Length: 210
Image (cartoon, rainbow, N blue to C red; front, top):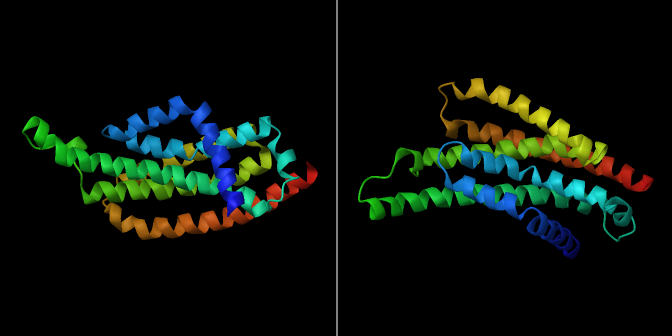
């Protein structure tokens, strides 16, 4: 537990020091209408990739091989970082909409604008985006551990393009967002379980070679 806490603190210290502007920009995104909260959540699962790139530049794999930390702990810390960051931005987006719902009539004296309205559909939509972002994380982290973060960035962009290409026609189907959640949840859980096991094997080989 202490090892996992230390790894997460290391990554959060890096983000706080080097990614402060991007984090503030993402915070602004969750406060805006339309698809902006979506962009913040999607970008949040890219942050573990940025941390991995920093680790590679700092020769972290060589140092990690000498530490009393299991490969499973080292790998899962990056998954957990993505889970926590994406969940935080989803929560912030939902809380912002709830605040607009309460505060808008008090400030303007009129009904809340539809683009800022809080609803069950919006919550379901953000949960769907969160699960989709976790699936994206699961597809890409094994590539990062295998190829390194720099080469893996291209794979991330390609995967993101494919997923957007699939989601655009699906978004036009007359299916309630809430009805998609159970299926997407199962897919996200299955992908992350398989992805984690693959990443452990790939990173273990990398550490042995370090």
